[in-house]
Structure formats: C-alpha cells, structure tokens
Length: 486
Image (cartoon, rainbow, N blue to C red; front, side, top):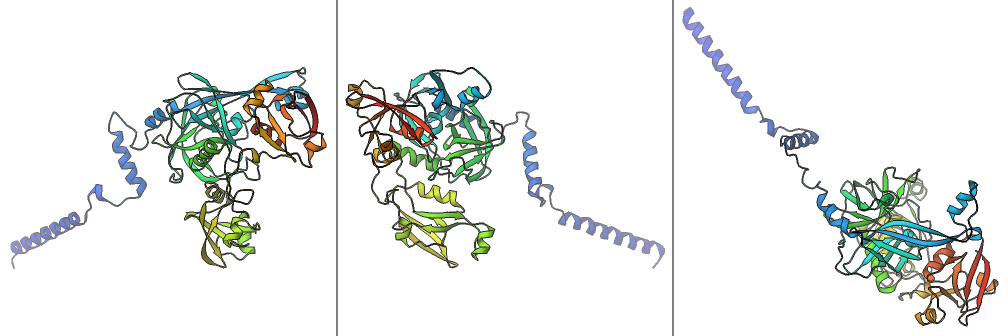
C-alpha cells in the first residue's frame, strides 16, 4: 500500500472512531433537567425558578392571608375583673407591694385579667382558658370591631384549663373546628389573640410537637396533651386561636415555656379534639362528664424496660388497676402495656389521657395492649369518678371538705337581694362542721372577695392555704362570719 492510501485509511479510521466516541457521549448524557440530584438541590432549582418572576408570590400552601382574614374576626378580647382584699386575703400583687415597702392598701382592690377567646358559634358561644376568667365577677368581651358585651359564664373545666362563656348576639363570625389529629409535625399554623392588649395579633409558626405534657396544671385529673408550636404567644394570647392554613380551629392557646414571663420560643395549645368534647359537655350539662379507666400508669423508659424485661419502649405501663373500675371489668391487669385506644396509637400517658377524656361515662372503647409480649384487644366501658355510668349533675361535683356547695335558686337570690353566692348543704364531718357552719349557709364573700356561684367558690377554696374568712348569710337573713383553715 502506498503512502497516500495508508494515510487516507488511517485518517478515515480516526475520523470514524471520533464520531463513534462523540455519539457515545451523546447517548449516555442525561439532559440537565433529568439528572438525578439530592432532594435539596431539586427543591432549590424549583424555588429559584420562582425567583425569576419579578412579581414573586409565596409558594402555594404557605400563604397566611386567607387564614388570617378568616380567623381574626372570630377571636375576641376578654377582660375580667374581680375584687381583692389586702390583709388575710392578700393577693400576690398585694404581697409584692408589701415586700417592696409600698404603703399598705386597705379595702377592696380592683383586680383583673386580660386574655383572648374564640367565637365557636354564630349565636355567641365563646371558648377561652379557665385561668382567664376563673376569679371574675364581671367578664367583658370586645369584638374585633370594638363592640363590647357582658358575657355569661356557662361552665369551666380546670382539668383542661378551658371555659365556655356566652354573649347575647347573633350572626357572629365564628371558627369551624379542624382536625388536630390530622395535624403533622412541621405544618404551618397561626396563633391569633391579643398579646399585651395588642388586639387581633397574628403570628405564624409550625407544629413543633404533639401530645406534650409540661406539668403546668398540677391537678390529680389534669389533662395535658398540648400541641407545641413556635408561633409567638405572649401574655394576653391565652384563650386565643391556633388555626391551620384553612383558617380552621385546631387548638386553644394556653401556655408558654418561659423564664422571663414572655415568649421564649415555645407555646402550647389544647387540641381541638379535646376542646370539642369539653365545650359539648359544658353546653349540655354545665360541667364536664369525665370518663376514666381507673388505672395507675407511667411512661415506659429505658430503666423500666430493663427492669421489667419489656420488648417495647413506647406505650403506657399499668402500675395499678382500681377495683371494679372500667379497666378491672375489661380484664386489664398490672404489667399490661397500652399501645392504642380505638386504633389511635398511644406512645405515652398524655396521649392516653386525652384519648380517654374525649369520651363520656358509658362509652365503650377498644384498648390494644401488650401482655407477656403478645398483642391483645379488650373493650372497656368507661365510668365516671363515682364509679358508675350516670350523668353527673353539676351540683353533686361541688363537694369540698365535708360539704356540698350548690348554686342558688333565682327566687332565693331575689328574696335576699343578693347578686351571687353559693349555698353550703349536706355538711358532714369536716372543716365546715368544725367551724360551726350550719346547713343552708350562703357564702357571699371569701376574704372579702365576692362569690358569684359554686363553681367560683370551689375554685377559690381549692387554692387557699391557711386561715380563710368566710362571710355570708342564712336564708332567714341572719349574717354570719367564720374563720376556716384550709
């Protein structure tokens, strides 16, 4: 082969090989928009494309405007007022002044609280926190349009720190109930309320945790299964709304975790699943129909799991079962681990308490438990605190230190020209009897603080420590005073 033919052959071979190589690269090359990338890179590309639009809009699902417009007209400002007395009935504020050398204050001292509330029906029912109105002689409700109303107390539930009040008005804006069970950690929420008397304030955050117990109620039957958020909540937000992006009510803002008294990053709301039940009971019965299983429980931790040789680390461990309780009759035993109620997962005591508290005495629930390493289901018919299935009447719950406290009939209030009070009946052995109180006595003041009804009286007395001045009258008009140590 001559030189020219050899050169031509080599040139064609090289050219053909190059074309094959280039073609191979094109075949194996993946288009830029189809390349496999880490999730965050894909998200950044999508987000960057939004920025190319000069009229930048918030990505769908992150627009808070609709939820704010729906919720703010339905969230009210609540101002409650009551009288406090220096001396034996000193309030914490009185004691503060005394500690810092301020001159003593005599006579009745006007006190008050400020908070928020949520209109839940067009005819004026409003849910708020018990601690916003628990001492109130008068409750004022101010709407977003600055209209003011005097509210009537329908009922309270200190065990959930909820209260129901009502104003006489119709066609009011109100919030609809959402589904707090369906809320997922990381979802956006809005807190709506009146912090520091700044009315109709809206803040945004996410659901940080669910079924959170922060040991703030400190009651034997207190229920803490809070929704935790990082939406800014401050004093005055109590009783306000926690809503989802649809503007649906998913919780009642109740507490903050703080060392300063102001927002420090976390806030807590009673889930609407529990709010609905409490509100329904208060409207129908005036008190909450509390259902109980009748068990002594604790969370499972590493130490318990090792000590009892448990195969699970989530659930509620049964330490004790009350005789003739709902749990006892259902066959629940000491050492059982409850992992679900009505197929809803139970990871700890707060979830168990909430799921049970959504029911009324007489309701039957399915309890999924683990016994000796095996799953088992039983059905328990819940009882009330009197260990039966009956509806509990309002008055029968007001038993304190050996006496029954009852609300006054309207006729008796009118005959004695009283604005409020609570009657002491069925006195047995106890502090009332020891102090010489006779049946029928009507308590009108405690440490000079006026008493509106039995609910308020019970709340005040439960928080009293030491000597307490009880003032009142008997149905025949004879006034009397008693000193009782609680």
